Length: 172
Image (tube, rainbow, N blue to C red; front, side, top):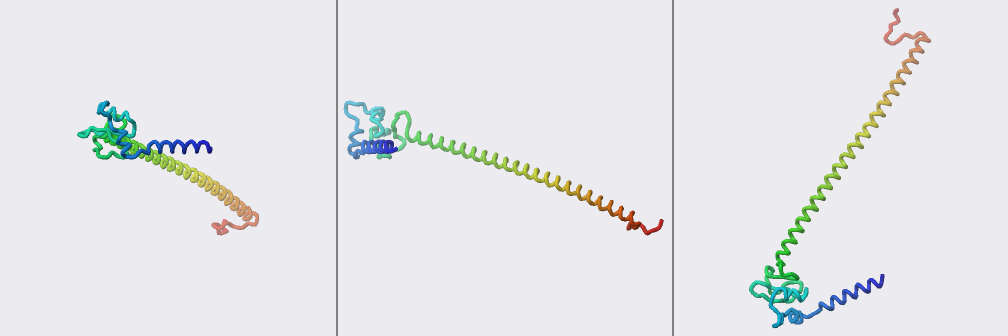
């Protein structure tokens, strides 16, 4: 683990030191010599420290996280066949499309989850209602059985002791 950390920090240190040129050193590094053609390919071939400024200036300039003294429309960085502004527009459009797709997928998943929960709750409520109805029917059946038993016992007592029913006036 420590070896990996040391390796990481040494790589970071080397990359920082290698890119630690002053502005004048960067300008000298990006200057195209008199023996070379003053073209975008020559400039971009020097590496990622330089960019080609097209338009009216047509010169190789040092890159320092921004494009000094050059309109963004004319900047060519790393490749000559695509403008930096065009690349930025394409990247922004692609990012927008991806964002819209992700939002649509998120909304779709939320709707499906909501629908699943609705169906699940409906099934759960229906199951609960069925249990409740079954329990109610069982209670009603037990109640009617007990009521019939009480009536039968009452009738048996009336017969045993010759007690007339409530509706009877005792007239035969």
